[in-house]
Image 1 (tube, rainbow, N blue to C red):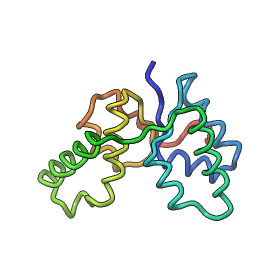
Image 2: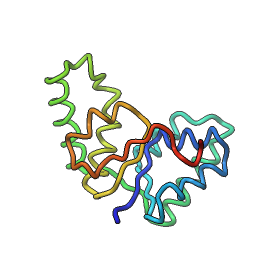
Image 3: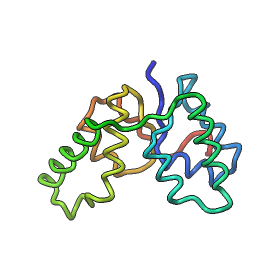
Image 4: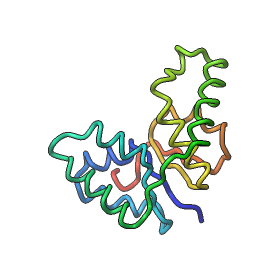
Length: 147
């Protein structure tokens, strides 16, 4: 089975539910290896409060020690630009919020290259799902461990 990559929205929801919920995210993967996107890590650091910073630092440390941080490569960046151009031409650049979709597309491109499932809550990634294989994204309205 392919590795699992959780989107930023999953980590944020788990952190809001408490520290133990963040650790429990592994249960959502059903025994598959969980990886952390470097883009997700950057988003978490950018939005973390002082009180939760230690949780993000621990995520970084744990995934780095396990050598399970997925870093976008040059091709991921190039494909991201191409996909955003296609979406902009199809839906209008103002409609897709190109700047906001950059991180989403980058996460999706690197997940697709790596062959992992991307699990998220965010609706904006739905625009990106046709750009990669169907196995790329597992759409969930709410993470089951937090319900």
